[in-house]
Length: 113
Length: 115
Image 1 (tube, each protein chain N blue to C red):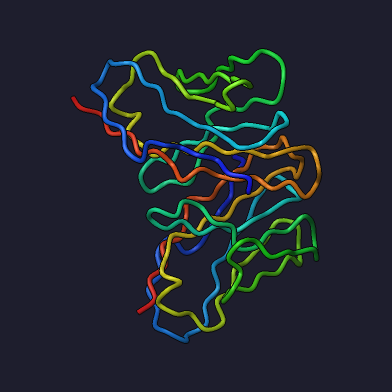
Image 2 (tube, each protein chain N blue to C red; image 1 turned 90 degrees about the vertical axis):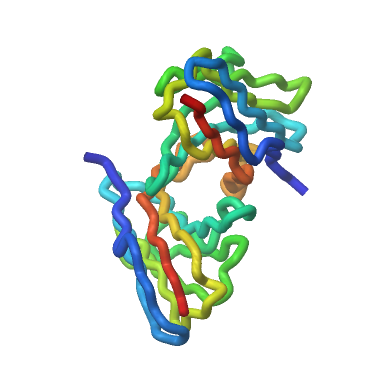
């Protein structure tokens, strides 16, 4: 089944403790992206990647890192999480063409205390 | 600035009633247009898309949307809603054909269904 898999689904952590949210897709998609979703703010893009070893900042990259060493994986790294990074995070992928729809994972709900 | 506007944050309709969710965008050219649905606890799922051709497009779950260039709108419709349609709906736009034209999402409309 074609899918985008994020792990974990839920994560509670403390300020400053490094964490990684994994994202994997099995559709051989070139394009991958991370979003955060907050009430009243909609979806905001954190980082994206057009292909292996190519990553770019989105609209809200501060406090996040990503890597794209393999086509299928695009982990999101929070080196020193802070409470304002408490949010619902989504990974998405697509073929990379402008008319290609995004395929989303089921989300990771992160709480930083 | 380029933007996508969904003017209704919340909409409540009775089961079996018709539905229209509004979406307006602020681009001059014909963009690529999408509607996504987010059910509770789920990621976004594509409902339908419009690129060119017939301005009325059909999607999954009985939804349709109509592109109106003169109004810069891409409203989503369904003739008769079901309780399972309760979800959040996002309109999204890719402004053009350039590789750096990124998808822009509206802030979403949450649909509530009355039994």
